[in-house]
Length: 85
Image (cartoon, rainbow, N blue to C red):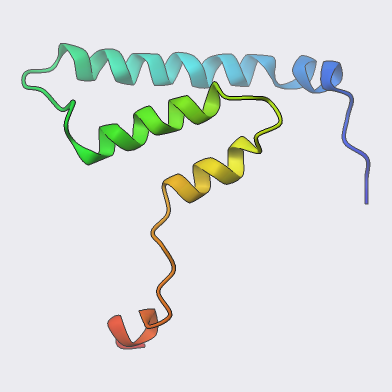
């Protein structure tokens, strides 16, 4: 298994992409704020706020896994029957 790059090399390689994604997220949130109405109580916004909390949490928290679980539906053993598969 290949060893991960040192953190500084990873930051050097990915900084501009990370920056662009953060700016894109900020722009999306700004558009929501400027739009008519209020989506603060929308369940999707609760997920977004939860995701932002995960992103700003402790660096040892395995954020990608936590985000995937946050935005995923719980596993249902009967999913095949539900979708008639």
